[in-house]
Amino acid sequence: MPTYEYAHKIESCGNEWEEWKSITKCFPTPEDKCPKCGATGNIELQVSGGSGRGRVELGEQEYRAKIKQDAKDYKKAVYASEEKYANIIGPEKYNHIQTQMDKNKGGRW
Ligand SMILES: [Zn+2]
Image (tube, rainbow, N blue to C red; front, side):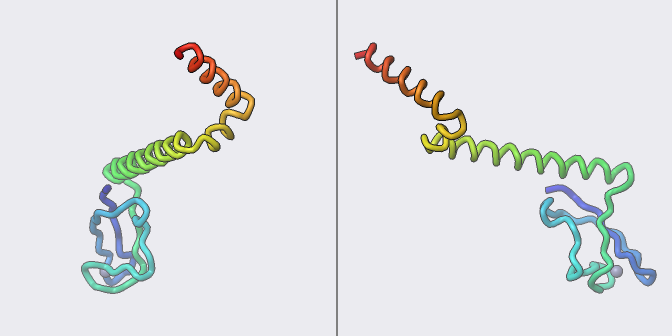
């Protein structure tokens, strides 16, 4: 999980801190508490600055890894279902492949 930088945007506090969070939960909610003064709300996610950019990149990598995993799962689902596979390559091509497979079977036996 990437590290995110937060700031409590009120004049009486102005606390800045870092937190480890999942990319889907990195944006602060009005219920989030400032670890210094304990007040809720007015918390901002900091993404600017040199070190901040590095953190954003890390988040992007995590995001890309998730997309990759989703694509893998999708592929698995496609290969698991002949119907889905036929839909993607088109019925004509699918029938052609099936014919080729039958031909190969015939040749082997
Ligand atoms: Zn505070």
